[in-house]
Length: 218
Image (tube, rainbow, N blue to C red; front, side):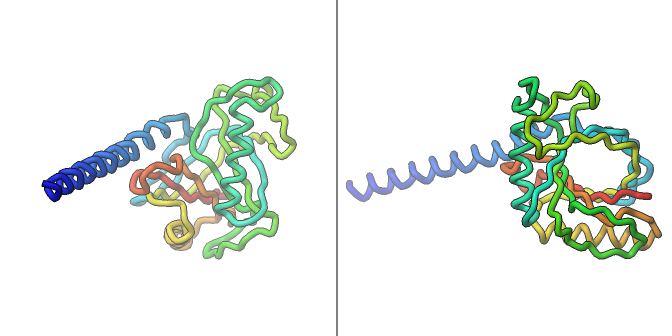
């Protein structure tokens, strides 16, 4: 009788664990895409080469902060500062709608002809939020933090590779090698600094995450 009760209890625990696991998986599949249904920068697609595209982006307004240290730590710190700004810590105390992606790049820009090798910048990393297109540089609420700089980015052309998975170094390096190879083979003249774009919140399942590496075409 005791063994039967122990077996029943064990089965119940297994069922509860399975239900919790299914709930977590469903949350990962649903919340990630829902949270990512936000405004993204507008562009015109010029050409497609498998998962590599050449795009012409409209002018955009960004809020940018420069952070020292390692890449993964820098994007976390930069995100907190920028999120604080759009959640209302600005001169007007106004909330600004979240957009995607979160953009990160080394601080220094260098012109290049392919092939190229990425070199770290001793100044750190620039982390940026693209501001909603409804704002101009005059109407956007002004940040209180002197770490945040508002910039108007003019129209430009980008070569972009899109990929899934975590934004960890191994995954980024693999796809950066692929886009650099494409740049070399097509004799593209680009700005040497890569731009990393991450579209999803960190709790999104890796298979559903959208990431991009971009190089500005001269």
